[in-house]
Structure formats: C-alpha cells, structure tokens
Amino acid sequence: MVIVYFNLVDKPMLFNATRFFGSEIQARDGRIGKVTDIYFDDKTWNVRYIVVTCEGWFDRREIILIPSSIRMPSTNTQMLMTDLTMEQVKNSPKVSSDLPVSRQYETELHEYYAWTPYWTYPIYGNYGFSSYYPNVEKTASALKQQPGSEHANETYYDSHLRSLKGIKGYHIRAVDDELGHIEDLVIDSEIAEVTHFVVDTVNWWPSKHVLIEVSSVRSIDWESRTLSTFLDRGTIKAAPEFDATRTLEPEAMEALWNYYHRQNKPWIPQGEFRDMSTHPQ
Image (cartoon, rainbow, N blue to C red; front, top):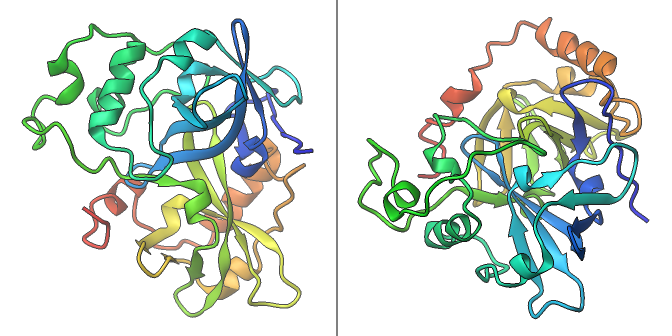
C-alpha cells in the first residue's frame, strides 16, 4: 500500500510526488481511478496534469486532470476529490498515454471542461491544487493563442511537458563529479510547482537521499538523461538526509534552505534557467 504524507498544518504544503501515486480520485458520483503519473512543464516546473488510470467501468485506460480540479485531503488518506462527475470524465477528449501531449489536445481538453488554459495565465503563473481557477468562454481565440505570443497563429506546438516517471533515474552531475540519480520530486501543492529533486547519492557509500533545489539546476540534457547543478559534490554530500516522514515539515525545510544558501553559491534565478540555450526549444 502506498502511504501519502500530506502536511496541512502549515502552508505551503509539500509532498513527495511518488507517494501521490496510488491515490484514488473520487468524482461526485463514484470513483474514477488512481494517480499513476504527473506531467510537469520543463520550462517553469509547474505541474500541469495528473494522470489517472481508470477503473474497469471506463472504456479507456488513462485520463488527465489539471491540479486545480483536485481537492487535497484534510487528513492522511489516499482519497482525492474532484467536483467532476463520472460522466464528464468518461466523455472527455481521449489522450494518448505517450508524451508529448500536443497543444491541440490540451486546447480540446480545456475547451471541454471550460478550464482556463495555463498558457493564457500571466507569465510563469499557475493554479495549485484545490484552487478556484477561473472559467472562460469556449472561444478558439482565447484557448489557442496568447496575446503577443510568437505562437499566436499556431494551433500546435511543443508544450514542454515531462513525465515524473520519465525523469526518474536521470543522472545528477555536480560541478566536480557525478553523484547519483533523480529518485523523486517534491511538489508545493499551493502553487502546483516542483520545488526540489530527491537525489539518491548512489555513487557514494553509504548512499543516502538528499534534496536539491530546482533553482540550483544549471542545465538538463534530455538526450543523455543528465541533470547538471551548480552545487559541488561536497555540498550535496553533506546535505541533510531526506526523510519523507519529517523532512518536508516547515522547520526542516527552513533548515535545508539555510544550509544551501549559507554556501553563497552563485546560482542563477530559476526564471533565467528557462531561457538558457541548453534548454530544449
């Protein structure tokens, strides 16, 4: 059984993503299925979709939902709620289980549910879990283009979606050594954004799991499945060990932030990483 650790005492609420897997999604009139993956934007780290594998009543294997359509639980539980009905979900646009998800499909999905498309939000904006997202009129102009965008006349382009299952296992390269691989992601549910990578330092003995901030990422090579960071081996090796039952508490996260930032590393702001030439366009 998967145990989902949710801390709802303090905000923002953080959780390690793979422990979200296996959580049941409950519609207004019955169970839809279980969470089996998460798609996030590799330019902004925003979580865009939750992948749900449906129960036997459904005529397809998987559907995707936006985070703000899902209400987080009030206690430690595997049940997540949505105001959608089973019929709504059953009639939603069908999606291939393989990435990338096309912008054409995303447009159809947002149009069907009358969800505000994230590409029309203010730059780098996002709505978190349990948010009251604004609905929009079902007009093609609102859904297919963003004012002033270079893609304004396009109906299809790469939406930079990545799968948690896909990025798990990527190699980590410090400035002076390779040290392990990505084991998991940490997500802030209030803004539905990836905040940290959980790294297994398997190259050392004894190995341990540590967190590194997404803002310390220098580049990601998607072809070689390697993430490079501005951190050095010693800094990562001496970082506090990650414990899913305690590390995500506010006091522990504050201590982790102080540990990394007292190093005075010349990290670039996260927004600049999004525009680096090493980033896939």
